[in-house]
Image (cartoon, rainbow, N blue to C red; front, side, top):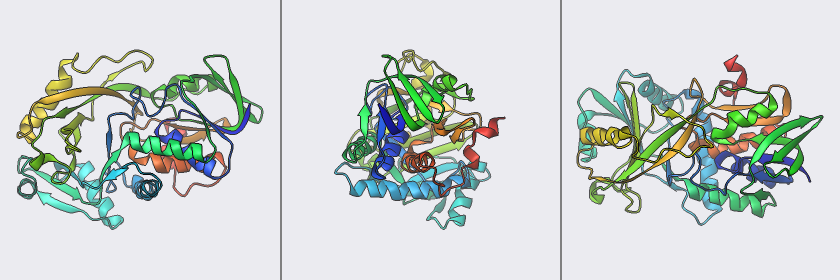
Amino acid sequence: MHYDHIIVGAGSMGVAAGYFLAKKGQNVLLLDAFNPPHDHASHHGETRLIRYAYGEGLYYVPMALRAKELWEQLQRQTDETIFHQTGIVNIGYKDHPFMNNVIASAKQFDLPLEVLSADEIQEKWAGIHIPKKLIGCFEPTSGVLRVENCIRSYRTLAEKEGATIRTNSKVVAVRSVGDIVEVELATGERFTANTAIISVGAWAKQLLHSLALDLPLNPIRKTFAWYEAEEALYDQQNFPGFAFDFDGEAYYGFPSIDGAGLKIGRHDGGDSINPDEARVPFGDIVEDKSDLDAFLQTYMPKVGPMKFGKTCMYSMTPDEDFIIDRHPNHSNITIAAGFSGHGFKFASVVGEILSDLAMNEKPQFDLTPFSINRFK
């Protein structure tokens, strides 16, 4: 069967793109190896932070602000909870590039931001204990996205707009055949379309081999865990999301939402993996627990014992910037990959961007930082 557009990977970015294309009246097929939302890839684990004063680079800020608008729009279209405005505090050294970027982006884009000393942080949140050499940047309008709710809502809206979603349908090859794109499933079924979007997360590198494209993508195993926490100190009404970045280490976390406990993960590090192989369970590697325990004992000593942990995957690029671009030899194939552990907050706007590229419309953002050509 022939479609206007085929989207390979109906997770966070893919399902958003499917919604925006279907909303434009396009005939869209979304294919996914699993049944989104699911726990096989990068988008599970209940929650993700969304920040606007962005330490990873000022060029992300306009996209983050547009993502915010689109998440708010999605909230108006669904009964699911999409966002909790908990605020987020970034903590690090005053002269660290990450912290400088947070402060600079707030100034440039007129974003609300409180720069706090260590004493001010501890006065504001009794659950944090940090040395005086660290500072904090608190962004009160930022907060937490409910991951599964976001994906489920976009999926529902895409189907209402007429998109077809085929789950448990693993794509093994994408081919350019003249002016059309052919997609082949593991079952041998084939579909064609005028354009294709490839947004398969950790599976991008191997799938793109069928299009003679080798990108420097590295899937890695990541872990996170929930801890017992006194609600009066650490619940979503009293405690912010947080990101610590210093001494070559980076940790992030969430307040206790709906009594789930404080959630924390380590952002840096991780072992390379084959996404088709079973991941090593949480706790089978000693550092899974010991790293998180040591961090909390130092900086949040009032947090209780671990409740449980989970694993997920990042798909890393060498510079930790995204890939959002057309295939260099096939302009009707668009690629979204390498979101490097900080992509979910942008899923709404990336979906919009991908729909623009598929329709050959000019996106409203400069995508140069996300170009495939930067790896040449």
